[in-house]
Length: 265
Ligand SMILES: NC(=O)c1ccc[n+]([C@@H]2O[C@H](COP(=O)([O-])OP(=O)(O)OC[C@H]3O[C@@H](n4cnc5c(N)ncnc54)[C@H](O)[C@@H]3O)[C@@H](O)[C@H]2O)c1
Image 1 (spheres, rainbow, N blue to C red):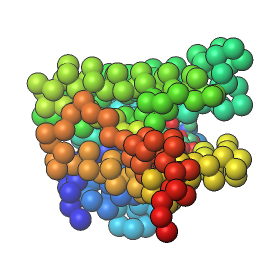
Image 2: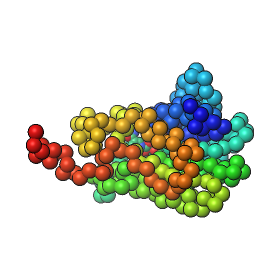
Image 3: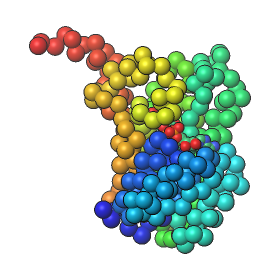
Protein backbone atom coordinates (compact mmCIF):
# COMPACT_ATOMS: atom_id res chain seq x y z
CA UNK A 1 0.00 0.00 0.00
CA UNK A 2 2.75 2.47 0.82
CA UNK A 3 5.60 1.51 -1.46
CA UNK A 4 5.75 5.06 -2.87
CA UNK A 5 4.91 6.94 0.32
CA UNK A 6 6.28 10.53 0.22
CA UNK A 7 7.22 10.30 -3.47
CA UNK A 8 6.17 12.76 -6.15
CA UNK A 9 5.82 11.17 -9.59
CA UNK A 10 5.32 12.76 -13.01
CA UNK A 11 3.92 10.53 -15.75
CA UNK A 12 3.65 11.80 -19.31
CA UNK A 13 0.91 10.30 -21.47
CA UNK A 14 -1.05 9.50 -18.31
CA UNK A 15 -4.39 10.42 -19.92
CA UNK A 16 -4.77 6.95 -21.41
CA UNK A 17 -3.60 3.35 -21.61
CA UNK A 18 -0.44 2.32 -19.79
CA UNK A 19 0.24 5.84 -18.47
CA UNK A 20 -3.20 6.05 -16.83
CA UNK A 21 -2.77 2.61 -15.25
CA UNK A 22 0.68 3.56 -13.96
CA UNK A 23 -0.66 6.81 -12.47
CA UNK A 24 -3.49 4.99 -10.67
CA UNK A 25 -1.19 2.24 -9.36
CA UNK A 26 1.44 4.73 -8.16
CA UNK A 27 -1.25 6.69 -6.35
CA UNK A 28 -2.50 3.49 -4.67
CA UNK A 29 1.06 3.06 -3.37
CA UNK A 30 0.99 6.51 -1.79
CA UNK A 31 2.64 8.73 -4.45
CA UNK A 32 1.41 12.20 -5.28
CA UNK A 33 1.02 11.98 -9.04
CA UNK A 34 1.28 14.54 -11.82
CA UNK A 35 -0.88 13.36 -14.69
CA UNK A 36 0.61 15.01 -17.79
CA UNK A 37 -0.91 14.71 -21.24
CA UNK A 38 -1.53 16.90 -24.27
CA UNK A 39 -5.17 15.85 -24.09
CA UNK A 40 -6.30 18.08 -21.21
CA UNK A 41 -9.63 16.33 -20.74
CA UNK A 42 -7.97 12.91 -20.61
CA UNK A 43 -5.48 14.15 -18.00
CA UNK A 44 -8.34 15.58 -15.93
CA UNK A 45 -10.23 12.27 -16.19
CA UNK A 46 -7.25 10.29 -14.89
CA UNK A 47 -6.73 12.79 -12.06
CA UNK A 48 -10.45 12.57 -11.18
CA UNK A 49 -10.23 8.75 -11.00
CA UNK A 50 -7.27 9.07 -8.64
CA UNK A 51 -8.87 11.66 -6.36
CA UNK A 52 -12.16 9.69 -6.29
CA UNK A 53 -10.12 6.73 -5.01
CA UNK A 54 -8.66 8.92 -2.23
CA UNK A 55 -5.31 9.80 -3.87
CA UNK A 56 -3.64 13.10 -4.76
CA UNK A 57 -3.21 14.03 -8.43
CA UNK A 58 -2.45 17.15 -10.42
CA UNK A 59 -3.58 17.14 -14.07
CA UNK A 60 -1.29 19.10 -16.40
CA UNK A 61 -1.44 19.83 -20.11
CA UNK A 62 1.91 19.14 -21.75
CA UNK A 63 3.19 18.69 -25.28
CA UNK A 64 6.38 16.65 -24.99
CA UNK A 65 7.36 17.78 -28.50
CA UNK A 66 8.06 21.23 -26.99
CA UNK A 67 10.92 21.82 -24.58
CA UNK A 68 9.21 24.84 -22.96
CA UNK A 69 6.17 22.72 -22.24
CA UNK A 70 8.31 20.02 -20.58
CA UNK A 71 10.10 22.68 -18.53
CA UNK A 72 6.74 24.12 -17.41
CA UNK A 73 5.50 20.63 -16.43
CA UNK A 74 8.51 20.05 -14.18
CA UNK A 75 8.34 23.55 -12.60
CA UNK A 76 4.59 23.22 -11.97
CA UNK A 77 5.22 19.86 -10.26
CA UNK A 78 7.84 21.25 -7.91
CA UNK A 79 5.71 24.33 -7.23
CA UNK A 80 2.68 22.20 -6.30
CA UNK A 81 4.33 19.34 -4.42
CA UNK A 82 7.71 20.80 -3.38
CA UNK A 83 9.91 18.08 -4.93
CA UNK A 84 10.26 15.54 -7.72
CA UNK A 85 11.35 11.91 -7.20
CA UNK A 86 10.00 9.91 -10.14
CA UNK A 87 9.67 10.77 -13.83
CA UNK A 88 8.08 8.43 -16.36
CA UNK A 89 8.91 9.51 -19.90
CA UNK A 90 6.08 7.49 -21.28
CA UNK A 91 4.70 9.29 -24.37
CA UNK A 92 5.76 7.76 -27.66
CA UNK A 93 4.76 5.96 -30.80
CA UNK A 94 4.66 6.49 -34.57
CA UNK A 95 2.01 6.38 -37.24
CA UNK A 96 2.09 2.82 -38.65
CA UNK A 97 0.52 4.06 -41.89
CA UNK A 98 3.50 6.28 -42.72
CA UNK A 99 6.27 4.65 -40.65
CA UNK A 100 6.94 1.91 -43.20
CA UNK A 101 9.93 -0.02 -44.55
CA UNK A 102 13.21 1.74 -45.38
CA UNK A 103 12.31 2.38 -49.04
CA UNK A 104 8.80 3.69 -48.40
CA UNK A 105 8.95 5.29 -44.96
CA UNK A 106 8.00 8.94 -44.67
CA UNK A 107 11.01 10.96 -43.53
CA UNK A 108 8.81 13.66 -41.96
CA UNK A 109 7.33 10.89 -39.81
CA UNK A 110 10.87 9.81 -38.92
CA UNK A 111 11.66 13.36 -37.71
CA UNK A 112 8.40 13.44 -35.74
CA UNK A 113 9.27 10.06 -34.19
CA UNK A 114 12.64 11.39 -33.06
CA UNK A 115 10.97 14.40 -31.41
CA UNK A 116 8.09 12.48 -29.81
CA UNK A 117 10.04 9.49 -28.47
CA UNK A 118 13.72 10.29 -28.22
CA UNK A 119 14.08 14.05 -27.84
CA UNK A 120 11.19 14.12 -25.34
CA UNK A 121 12.86 11.42 -23.22
CA UNK A 122 16.15 13.30 -23.21
CA UNK A 123 14.51 16.64 -22.39
CA UNK A 124 12.30 15.19 -19.66
CA UNK A 125 15.41 13.88 -17.93
CA UNK A 126 17.32 17.11 -18.51
CA UNK A 127 14.69 19.20 -16.75
CA UNK A 128 13.98 16.69 -13.96
CA UNK A 129 17.54 15.77 -12.94
CA UNK A 130 18.45 19.05 -11.14
CA UNK A 131 15.34 18.66 -8.93
CA UNK A 132 16.11 14.99 -8.26
CA UNK A 133 19.64 15.90 -7.23
CA UNK A 134 18.13 18.45 -4.82
CA UNK A 135 15.80 15.74 -3.45
CA UNK A 136 18.78 13.41 -2.81
CA UNK A 137 18.01 11.10 -5.73
CA UNK A 138 15.26 9.84 -7.97
CA UNK A 139 14.07 7.27 -10.48
CA UNK A 140 13.57 7.93 -14.19
CA UNK A 141 11.55 5.35 -16.09
CA UNK A 142 11.60 5.46 -19.89
CA UNK A 143 9.14 3.59 -22.07
CA UNK A 144 10.90 1.77 -24.89
CA UNK A 145 9.42 -1.21 -26.75
CA UNK A 146 10.30 -4.70 -27.94
CA UNK A 147 10.63 -2.91 -31.30
CA UNK A 148 14.03 -1.74 -30.01
CA UNK A 149 15.19 -5.38 -29.91
CA UNK A 150 13.86 -7.11 -33.02
CA UNK A 151 13.44 -6.16 -36.68
CA UNK A 152 10.04 -5.71 -38.28
CA UNK A 153 8.66 -5.29 -41.78
CA UNK A 154 7.43 -1.78 -41.01
CA UNK A 155 7.78 0.86 -38.26
CA UNK A 156 11.46 1.40 -39.05
CA UNK A 157 11.44 4.76 -37.25
CA UNK A 158 9.72 3.32 -34.20
CA UNK A 159 12.37 0.63 -33.71
CA UNK A 160 15.19 3.13 -34.20
CA UNK A 161 13.90 5.75 -31.76
CA UNK A 162 13.01 3.17 -29.11
CA UNK A 163 16.56 1.76 -29.37
CA UNK A 164 17.76 5.33 -28.82
CA UNK A 165 15.57 5.54 -25.70
CA UNK A 166 17.46 2.51 -24.32
CA UNK A 167 20.77 4.23 -25.08
CA UNK A 168 19.67 7.46 -23.35
CA UNK A 169 18.62 5.34 -20.35
CA UNK A 170 22.14 3.93 -20.00
CA UNK A 171 23.76 7.37 -20.40
CA UNK A 172 21.57 8.95 -17.71
CA UNK A 173 22.13 5.98 -15.36
CA UNK A 174 25.88 6.27 -15.82
CA UNK A 175 26.09 10.05 -15.57
CA UNK A 176 23.83 10.62 -12.54
CA UNK A 177 24.23 7.34 -10.62
CA UNK A 178 26.69 9.05 -8.27
CA UNK A 179 23.88 11.48 -7.32
CA UNK A 180 21.61 8.53 -6.52
CA UNK A 181 19.50 8.90 -9.64
CA UNK A 182 18.47 5.63 -11.23
CA UNK A 183 17.29 5.36 -14.80
CA UNK A 184 15.72 2.27 -16.33
CA UNK A 185 13.64 1.48 -19.38
CA UNK A 186 10.73 -0.87 -19.95
CA UNK A 187 10.16 -2.66 -23.25
CA UNK A 188 6.49 -3.59 -23.36
CA UNK A 189 5.38 -6.22 -25.82
CA UNK A 190 1.82 -6.15 -27.13
CA UNK A 191 -0.38 -4.38 -24.58
CA UNK A 192 -4.09 -3.90 -25.12
CA UNK A 193 -4.53 -0.10 -25.10
CA UNK A 194 -6.38 2.36 -27.35
CA UNK A 195 -3.10 2.78 -29.31
CA UNK A 196 -3.01 -0.94 -30.14
CA UNK A 197 -6.76 -1.31 -30.70
CA UNK A 198 -6.99 1.72 -33.01
CA UNK A 199 -3.95 0.91 -35.13
CA UNK A 200 -3.87 -2.84 -35.65
CA UNK A 201 -6.25 -5.08 -37.63
CA UNK A 202 -7.69 -8.05 -35.72
CA UNK A 203 -5.58 -10.60 -37.65
CA UNK A 204 -2.41 -8.82 -36.47
CA UNK A 205 -3.69 -8.80 -32.88
CA UNK A 206 -4.35 -12.57 -33.19
CA UNK A 207 -0.86 -13.19 -34.57
CA UNK A 208 0.65 -11.19 -31.69
CA UNK A 209 -1.18 -13.45 -29.26
CA UNK A 210 0.18 -16.57 -31.00
CA UNK A 211 3.69 -15.07 -30.80
CA UNK A 212 3.63 -14.84 -26.99
CA UNK A 213 4.79 -17.69 -24.77
CA UNK A 214 1.94 -16.80 -22.40
CA UNK A 215 -1.59 -17.35 -23.72
CA UNK A 216 -2.68 -13.70 -23.50
CA UNK A 217 -1.67 -10.14 -24.39
CA UNK A 218 -0.57 -7.64 -21.76
CA UNK A 219 -2.82 -5.22 -19.92
CA UNK A 220 -1.85 -1.61 -19.08
CA UNK A 221 -1.63 -2.72 -15.43
CA UNK A 222 0.99 -5.37 -16.31
CA UNK A 223 3.32 -2.54 -17.38
CA UNK A 224 2.08 -0.19 -14.63
CA UNK A 225 3.09 -2.68 -11.91
CA UNK A 226 6.61 -2.81 -13.37
CA UNK A 227 6.71 0.99 -13.33
CA UNK A 228 5.68 1.00 -9.66
CA UNK A 229 8.52 -1.42 -8.88
CA UNK A 230 11.05 0.76 -10.74
CA UNK A 231 9.74 3.87 -8.97
CA UNK A 232 10.00 2.27 -5.54
CA UNK A 233 13.04 1.71 -3.34
CA UNK A 234 12.59 -2.05 -3.88
CA UNK A 235 14.56 -1.54 -7.11
CA UNK A 236 17.28 0.60 -5.45
CA UNK A 237 20.12 -1.53 -6.88
CA UNK A 238 18.69 -1.60 -10.40
CA UNK A 239 19.83 1.02 -12.89
CA UNK A 240 20.67 1.39 -16.57
CA UNK A 241 18.61 -1.69 -17.42
CA UNK A 242 15.92 -2.57 -19.91
CA UNK A 243 13.13 -4.68 -18.44
CA UNK A 244 11.34 -6.59 -21.19
CA UNK A 245 7.70 -7.13 -20.22
CA UNK A 246 6.33 -8.97 -23.22
CA UNK A 247 4.63 -12.25 -22.28
CA UNK A 248 7.68 -14.11 -23.63
CA UNK A 249 7.37 -12.67 -27.15
CA UNK A 250 11.11 -12.08 -27.58
CA UNK A 251 12.19 -15.09 -25.50
CA UNK A 252 10.76 -17.83 -27.67
CA UNK A 253 11.95 -19.02 -31.05
CA UNK A 254 9.75 -18.00 -34.00
CA UNK A 255 9.45 -21.75 -34.68
CA UNK A 256 7.95 -22.47 -31.26
CA UNK A 257 4.24 -21.78 -32.01
CA UNK A 258 4.33 -24.17 -35.02
CA UNK A 259 6.39 -26.83 -33.22
CA UNK A 260 3.89 -27.07 -30.36
CA UNK A 261 1.79 -29.25 -32.69
CA UNK A 262 4.72 -31.73 -32.90
CA UNK A 263 4.55 -32.48 -29.18
CA UNK A 264 2.94 -35.78 -28.18
CA UNK A 265 -0.58 -35.29 -26.85
N1 LIG B 1 0.38 -0.41 -26.26
C1 LIG B 1 1.40 -1.18 -26.61
O1 LIG B 1 1.24 -2.34 -27.04
C2 LIG B 1 2.81 -0.66 -26.46
C3 LIG B 1 3.88 -1.55 -26.71
C4 LIG B 1 5.18 -1.09 -26.58
C5 LIG B 1 5.41 0.23 -26.21
N2 LIG B 1 4.36 1.08 -26.00
C6 LIG B 1 4.67 2.46 -25.65
O2 LIG B 1 3.84 2.91 -24.59
C7 LIG B 1 3.67 4.35 -24.73
C8 LIG B 1 2.23 4.79 -24.77
O3 LIG B 1 1.48 3.79 -25.18
P1 LIG B 1 -0.01 3.56 -24.68
O4 LIG B 1 -0.32 2.22 -25.21
O5 LIG B 1 -0.16 3.86 -23.25
O6 LIG B 1 -0.73 4.67 -25.62
P2 LIG B 1 -2.08 5.50 -25.52
O7 LIG B 1 -2.36 5.96 -26.90
O8 LIG B 1 -3.11 4.72 -24.79
O9 LIG B 1 -1.65 6.75 -24.63
C9 LIG B 1 -0.77 7.70 -25.09
C10 LIG B 1 -1.08 9.02 -24.37
O10 LIG B 1 -0.07 9.95 -24.77
C11 LIG B 1 -0.70 11.21 -25.04
N3 LIG B 1 0.16 11.97 -25.97
C12 LIG B 1 0.35 11.72 -27.28
N4 LIG B 1 1.18 12.66 -27.80
C13 LIG B 1 1.52 13.49 -26.79
C14 LIG B 1 2.34 14.64 -26.69
N5 LIG B 1 2.97 15.15 -27.77
N6 LIG B 1 2.49 15.24 -25.50
C15 LIG B 1 1.84 14.76 -24.41
N7 LIG B 1 1.03 13.69 -24.43
C16 LIG B 1 0.87 13.05 -25.62
C17 LIG B 1 -2.05 10.83 -25.63
O11 LIG B 1 -2.97 11.90 -25.50
C18 LIG B 1 -2.43 9.61 -24.80
O12 LIG B 1 -3.18 9.97 -23.65
C19 LIG B 1 4.41 4.75 -25.98
O13 LIG B 1 5.71 5.17 -25.63
C20 LIG B 1 4.44 3.45 -26.77
O14 LIG B 1 5.46 3.45 -27.72
C21 LIG B 1 3.06 0.66 -26.12
